[in-house]
Amino acid sequence: MVEKSLTEYTPLSILKKYYGYTSFRRNQQEIINAILEGRDALCIMPTGGGKSICYQVPAMLLEGITIVISPLISLMKDQVDTLNSIGVPAVYINSTVSQSDQVMMMDEISQGMYKMVYVSPERMESNQFLNFLQQLPISLIAVDEAHCISQWGHDFRPSYAKIGRLIQQLSPRPIIAAFTATATKTVAEDIKKGLLLHSPQDFVSGYERENLAFSVVKTGNKRKYILDFIHNFKGESGIIYTATRKDVEELHGFLEKNGIKTVTYHGGMSEAIRNDHQERFIFDDEKIIIATNAFGMGIDKSNVRYVLHYQLPKSMEGYYQEAGRAGRDGENSECVLLFSSKDVQTQKYLIEQSTSYDDRKEHEYSKLQAMVDYCHTTKCLQTFIVNYFGDESSSECGKCSNCKSDLAEIDVTTEALKIFSCVVRMKERFGVTLIAQVLRGSNNKRIKELGLDQLTTYGIMKDKTEKEISEMTQLFIAEGYLALTTGQYPTVKLTENALSVLKHGEKVLQKIKPVKKEEPVHSELFEILRQVRRELAEREKLPPYIIFSDVTLKEMCKFY
Ligand code: ADP
Ligand code: MG
Ligand code: ZN
Image 1 (cartoon, helix red, strand yellow):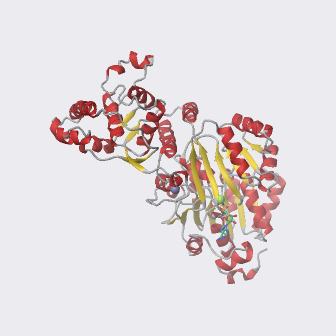
Image 2 (image 1 turned 135 degrees about the vertical axis):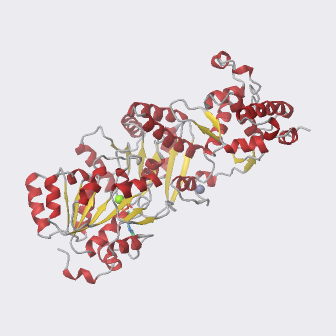
Image 3 (image 1 turned 90 degrees about the vertical axis):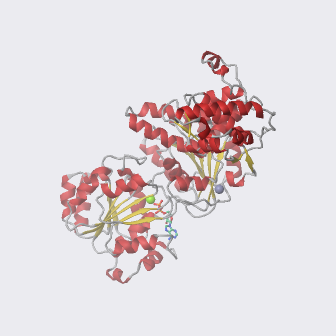
């Protein structure tokens, strides 16, 4: 039982007494105050930011009982065990608890023996359970991982969508507080509507995680990279995420052969073994866990020094949540993503397999594209991420692979003009690969069949490799000059940004590896741009001179 005198405590003294921490982290105090004042709240705080304390502390200070809705059995158990170990009476009721134990626990709950009761969203759907709740003095309902409520989140759970209606039936209505690490604007709206929050106070802690260093690594030999990496982090805890169960097993075998012990975790393993592996990792008996995205929700292991992604994840939301499991203790940690374009195809294949609804597919393709853009951008990676989630920061973290690269910004206007022109000449009907092949002047059969070797832009970048050209094109996509249509075979289109370059000769600066000096093709480019101008004029139904003048053109091509 919690001592009676608890009402004399303040949030801060609870924090010190029970958790042994000396101060609150960003927004914790404010969230706790709002709840204690009886307000609903929507709290968005990055993974590892300390959401649990935001509902546990009020739970101890409020009279009556707090119900915590939590999506995972392992998560409930962890939290309840921790609470019990610090002397807070909490309990969970889920399918792992025997029927007779449930009856006993419900009896104890009615007698006021617990301050916090953890339940799954599915449990809330049971009429019997709801009747039981109606008898209790419930002061607060905390909905953890609340993004599961939204179709547009990345972990949709149908039973979450029903919670709002169910808790409506409780009278008097408890305070409702929702917590999640990742919510775009749409998802945040879905949470508020879905839970029927009453003019909730919003708390958005910046998405930034200062102690994490992000990198994107493009290597032809991922396994060797991982070996070297682990070698540098000897004795440290790390998580390696792979896209499939098969990859988990194969990588595990490979590392074993090289004398590195790891444990595995994926949905194809029995629950007993999975739990065993998880515990061994959490309690530091094993340093490295190789897992699919089935691993980790709600895992609270503070000393994870790195999270390595063996392949591209399918969304930024998923990535940031997984990567965010590094460095919960605030110490510097690494988040590395190993990129290869082959993995983009794998993810597309998975999207095609997973759903037959077109708008759903469309949505997943655009999430994937953001992930691909992340891999191609030359901006600060931390900034790219927080911008994705809607923070308008433009700072530089100073420690990601882009901030640390010594690439200087160089003028790539000529390259941009060539690529953009080629896109126009190809009528915006083709993908990155074909565009690069045309610019490179490739002899491949398909190009001939399609007659693309007849285009004036054919071969105008023959001094570069196809790979260099497609990387540059990807970069222009990532930086918003070009855009890809969604779908399995996306085609490249110009955006307003590219049109401004074509129309007004705006300069394009990018951080890239120094490009080789150009052959003097300026007169050729001048002719191409005249042609492109006619096409654009036709498309936009404007007289050619409105688009740009020969003088501007000559300046753009440095052709006088
Ligand atoms: P989240 O649910 O937001 O991912 P958790 O609630 O699991 O994060 O908290 C992450 C870690 O941070 C936990 O180990 C927790 O004990 C710790 N933590 C939370 N608040 C504080 C604080 N004010 N001071 C120090 N550590 C904290
Ligand atoms: Mg949590
Ligand atoms: Zn950076």
